Length: 183
Image 1: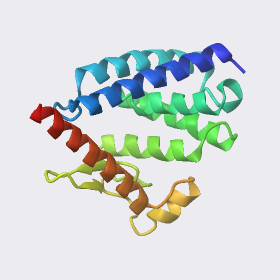
Image 2: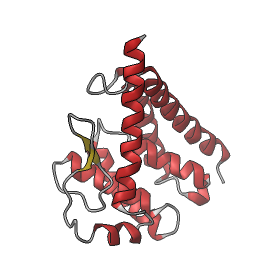
Image 3: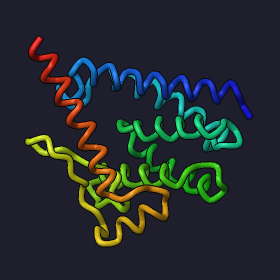
């Protein structure tokens, strides 16, 4: 195991999630299209994860451990300013899943993210949006009738469960925004 790389990936993930939570808590998340604070984090992480993958391929479980392999996926999942890079990572991640070096759910999320960012229907229903009233809904899907079966194959719960979790997060963000506006 490469402990130095493991620690670096976990640190990158921590910064991403800490920044995101701070924006949620302050009520700033969602006030602009792409908040500059989280954008800066994503740009730094994106630059470094490209270097890592370019040097040694996908950082899988045997190289960095399960938590850091998940961190690598999250960093790529948030590389939204470079969809070409995200798409190039699909082959690396797909191969890592086949070898047991990454989770199928990570591949499902990345595949759907790449598809929806290209205005194509998603496969697994992992990507959602929120309407003006604050209701979360899944973006268009290729095969909505079979989506729960496809999700199960990738180690995911049902679409209804995912939508409920996302709705809870949206509600919390909206509550924080209202509370901070009232101060």
